[in-house]
Length: 188
Image (cartoon, rainbow, N blue to C red; front, side, top):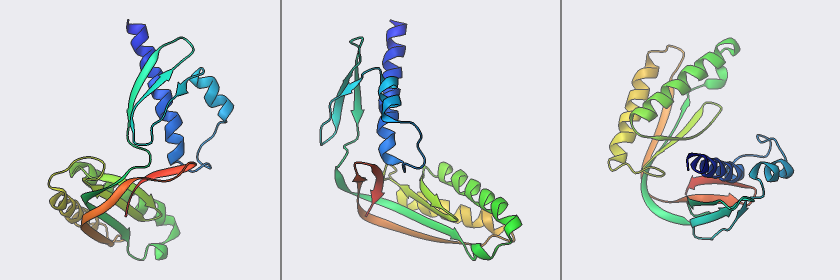
């Protein structure tokens, strides 16, 4: 029984990794479809447009049921969103840039974790985050404000780091958006 449970878990992990591929740029991923097929051991999948349970049958007849968030469903939800960046980041001395960025992002991730925020992405010195989008957070507005306030306080101690933060709260359209080759959970 233990071996069967491990095998089911392994097949579920492979299924999730294969789906994860849709959310990443091709330049980040390595491997071919042949390697994917070889890894999955002939795993087949059935999909539904509105999410639900998918059954995967491998060559040794083990069924794996995985609940999957709907692929194309977009819905309305009340969330808090934050975007922040370092003021005049491109004017920072090249020798300090990597260190400053690392400290800033580490502080951002720390305060997001403390406030139950979800880091969405970062691009250069711009950090995006959300509350109550992916994970429920009843007091999402307060949590976002407390995170922003803590991040401002934390980074103000660093003389070379002045940040700018934008917060917004309200109804948004959200869900997995994109195309077959690349999807991302997004907010509009």
